[in-house]
Length: 73
Image (cartoon, rainbow, N blue to C red; front, side, top):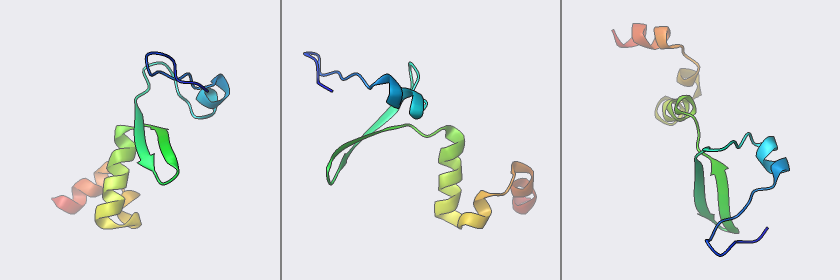
C-alpha cells in the first residue's frame, strides 16, 4: 500500500470484504504502540452494548430493552 499525493490510501478489496468495509463506512484511526490502527466505527448498538458492559458488567449488556425498562421503572 502507498499513500497518494492527497494523503489517501486504498484498502485492498480482500480486506474490505473481510471486514465489511463499504463505501461511506466510517473508520476510526488510532495511534498504537506499533503504528496506526484503522478500524470500522462500531454501530450505535455496539457502542451502547459497550457502554453497558463498562458501566454495569457483562450480565447487564445482555438485557433486552424491555428488561431494562422494567428495571428502571
